[in-house]
Amino acid sequence: ERRRLAAAAEPTPEERAAAAAATATVDPSVLALLGDDVELIDTVAFVTVAFIGSEMTVGLLCRVTDGETPLQVVIGASPEGAVVLAGERMSELTVTCTIDCQREPLVQILRGDLEPLMALTSGQVMVDDLGQLMAWKCAFRFERSEFNAFLGERRRLAAAAEPTPEERAA
Image (cartoon, rainbow, N blue to C red; front, side):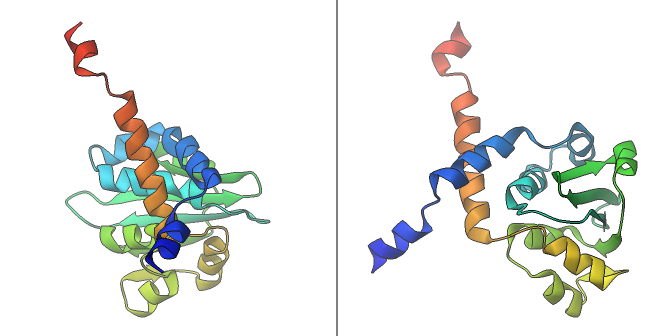
């Protein structure tokens, strides 16, 4: 039984390939905003992997109120794909819904640990348009097992890109 469950938990080659492709998809505007918050950068990078499609254009403005400086990013979904932008680039996306939350609930939602509706009903997230939030959520499959596969592949690729001690010494 354990072997069967372990085999079922293994990511497919397609999942690994999608995760690998997403390693370079974090927009520079987001990287500049998030600085050295590796956990949040990894979580935001997963958005393009979690995208499953959308027939409409929806944009979620996330206003994160942790720390001294509030963070704002827009997570957009359209028939062309998903993108996360920050700073001046946010105006490139149409915002259809705004959420206000702390950092941790946003991370939990994007990793698949917390359903957006549960976050809303528990008061962890405030939203201005529930219908648009649900339309946005339908464009993604945020599941923890897929996030874990993505993160493992992202870490493996980062380690493979590191120079060996011999290369550093040369």
